[in-house]
Structure formats: structure tokens, C-alpha cells
Image (cartoon, rainbow, N blue to C red; front, side):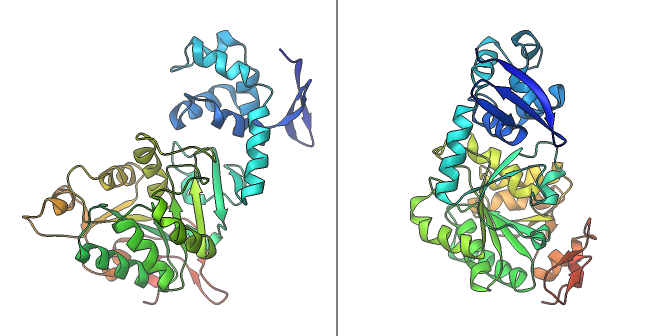
Length: 331
């Protein structure tokens, strides 16, 4: 095993390996690349040891004391101490025009930083801006009706035109309509991807993704070249909710992934809105259930702005406009 010692350099911890120095940013990236470490376990490890460097340099017996870490995962963490994977990932990201934003970075979205399982590393293609703290997520079914897509696009257009950033997941159906509505208004939109940013999913949305990069950003917590896996899609929904002040569900059946986003929003203290639909349409039953359980019924954008409370901090949406509460926006 390479020789290892820790030191403090310019106020930051640095691990010195035989292969070269490792700072906290590189260690966090490496931890993100270890198979078997998801958001919950990353949080446990970082809370237990204090830093990613300390996780990577921890003795095996200490790692095994963390709930969820078995012998195989402990060995994988120990084997990753050189951070060679992280160095390669960083180079690939630079080539692909993807930024790596740590939770300690001033660019990291403030609303997202407040959730309990915020991703330690965000992959970002495009640009995050302070005004993105004023955001609403619009999500719904992939198997959507023309009415549902029109409704999502109309809401997104009106909100984006007023200076609200629209968050969604780049999926077919409602998500794509929400992104397109924001883009058509000349506003900002962020797409949170389950896959790595090196693999756009669905593939037919490559052009849409390119437009989003021009007027916002593509975001992911997944390594750059990770393909879609079933568990990644519900997992990313907590990020969609975490970036927003509230989530609008437009058309969702009872098994729709959009309901995961609503659940995360509720757990994170965000507002949950639902667009009512036909009582005899399976694709609307999830929204109707949300309304029965206490979600705010939304008929127009005013319903959304009226329900949202003051922002945690003022947001500048233009040189002339500082917003303290969404209700101040001019539609």
C-alpha cells in the first residue's frame, strides 16, 4: 500500500501519498466513484470521519464500524486511496466541459445544501447562477396527454418569464414540456439527470439538453460515464425537490416516479402542488391522491406564488429586481 500521511496546507487538509498529494476535493470525488457507496452511506461516512480524506485513510476495522460497510466495501475504500480513478475522472470532465462542484463550493445551490442527503459532488454542464435559488420543479408522467404537456409548458413559460428557474428531469412527457416552456420564455432551466452527463437519457433529448446548457445547466451526482440504472432515477428525485421551493406534479399515475419527487419535497419541507385531472383517467390518479392527502391544488401560476412563503435569502433575478418572496414577481 502507498505510504500515506496527512498534513494541513493553507488551511486545508492534504493527504500525501507516494503517488502525490490528495486534497479534499479529489478525495470526495474518489469516494463518489467507489461502487456501493450511495448518498446515505456517503453522509454516514463523512459524518463519522469528518472528511473524505479521513474516510479514505481510515483503517479497515474503523470502516467496518459504520452501518452499511461490510468487508468487501471496506476493502474497496482502502484500495481507492491512491485516487487514480478520481484523477482520471477529473481529466475526463475537463475534456467534456463538465464542472465538478463540491458542497463546500460557493457555487453549490443553497437550497440543495440544506437537505439531509445532499450530494457531496455535483457534475454540472452549463452554469449555475445565484438566481437559481428561486426555483420551482415541474414533473410528471412520461406517458402524458397533450393536455398535460400543454399545462406543464404553460406553467413553466409563465414562471420562467417572471424570473423563476424551472427544475425538471429531462424525461419524456411532462419533464421535457417543462424544460421547453422555460426555454421558449428565454428563462432558465436546470435538468437533473440520473445518468452521468456523458450519457444523455433519453437519447432523443440530446438537442434539448444542448439548449438547456445554453440557458441553464445539466446536473448529476452520477459519475460522468455512468449509464442509466433503475435505482438512480428515484434517487435523483430528491435533488429535483431539493433545488426548488416547491414541486408541481402535472399528470401522474399511482406508480409514477413523480410521486417519489412529491414525497421527497414533503420530507424536505417544500410545497407540493398538484394539477387536478379526470377522475376516470389512470394517468391522473396519482395527482388526485396527492390532493386528497393535502397537496395544494393548482389551477394557475398565481396559485403557486400565493402558496409559497418568503425565501430563505433575497434573490436577485435581474440588475433591477431583488425578490424576497415569490409573490413579489410580476407575471
